Image (tube, rainbow, N blue to C red; front, side, top):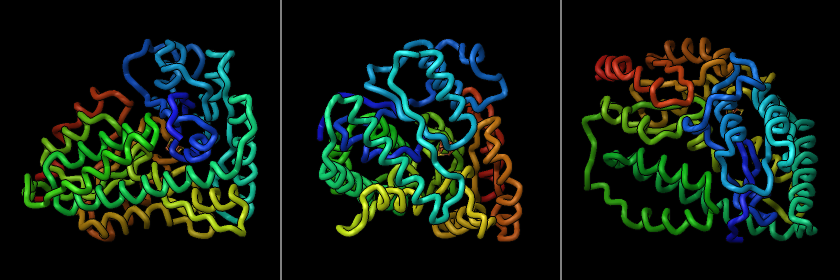
Length: 351
Ligand code: SF4
């Protein structure tokens, strides 16, 4: 369903196919650095800069026209963002969806109910009644988008195409703010035209990149300039955006969607109590699978879930002789630019 009506979202756990099926284009509210710094009037200073910069945009009216905004109760800072948004923009339509912190059966069943609540609310914003068949169509479109992204990113990274990671991030950013129907033809063209013999960047050092929010193209250019080649990523604004969604005729659609969201790669805020080392071991396995020589973590200041997990990630990577560089960011290019010397030194050490 190609539409210009936007619904904002702020977190990669947001069920984009539901927003799409209700007749909207999901629009990611990136934490742009071009609004007045005013969120501190509503939220505490020591809060995640991702959340504060999004609220700055809301206060500054630095957003396109949106029919509503979907917030995920994924971490406390995101929960506060919902409160702050309602205070700053009381006339906006907004909904907060609870996303459980653990991933057992009761969490999956609970989240399916939350998805059904979201579905009803999205149609209320539309003033119409939803048709479940549109969810299947949207899931099919998002599955196409996932397959294309997987194929194109793996080809670009396998061939180590020069500036390939800039291209990938540019497309992730576009796919976060425009309908999937706009992105699928671009990915198909790219898929047909990737030629591994051209512009191969074989001198750079393969690095696995993980963290939460990093979407600025200049940041990826900086990695290139420092001699790094991102051979795979695990970012909220990167590979975690799209995932396969399996549906069957027999199963409730919301339950299938919930199961699929819980089967994808998690950020640090989701925890499996039966398997506490999973987050760190997943990072190790992904880094090994792409033959990385080192790992870079880009985490935002005051992001407790990541800061809490980093010591065990460091320990497990060290046991496996994979060096880790941690970069702390504040959603400005200034902060990552200041880390240039550290990134260069890290890459030189790995050569
Ligand atoms: S770090 Fe986790 S909770 Fe925060 S925006 Fe990313 S996916 Fe959402």
